[in-house]
Image 1 (tube, rainbow over the protein chains, first blue to last red):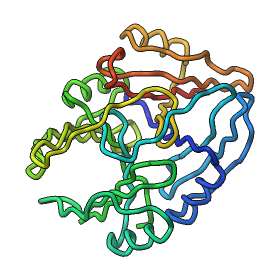
Image 2: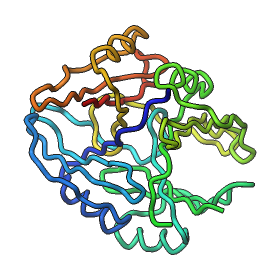
Image 3: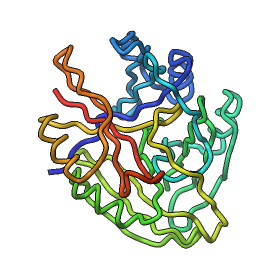
Length: 129
Length: 136
């Protein structure tokens, strides 16, 4: 039996600000906002569709490397559905998330683009067809 | 439709091998395995037990893509993803048996286990992924 994804986790110097950006940009709901025993502030968010996205700061004594919104090996990006890709590209740019790549018309597939979200997160915006 | 988070995407030098590892480790189902026309990259579409989509693909050589190194270390931005487990101890034993590296200890203070778990086809290289296991 397959395991289920529990959450994806974003780390941010100012997790509240980042969470509020996702609320405005993609309609996330902030479920909780606490300081954990590890010393980090952690916001538990629910994205439309139900996937949990945790957003937290560094834990006590934790040294954090920078994010990477460029294309890279490993866990690279997550994708978000869009009803109107071009409109969302413009809307997200106005919210401070510049276009990185696209729009790309995938042969036989979707219309996609990549934007740079807060804390150098690479986000794929997907208009399904 | 709304802005549903519809997938996470892993990039791998050998996407077939990586997908096979996730099949073995977490029971993911491989639904498709194709070479994409535009990028020339091998692209495997996988699903977790709840039907959530995890894509695993290679470098888009036909587009001249040169991927930066990965990192499984703590970092800002998109850092890791987590799987639900029923029994943290046995899963850690099973997964570390595949020679993956574990950081820290499960947090049992609130009767909730959470840990960070580094995994990937080659744990000592920079082609690693960071994931958390969360259980009740």
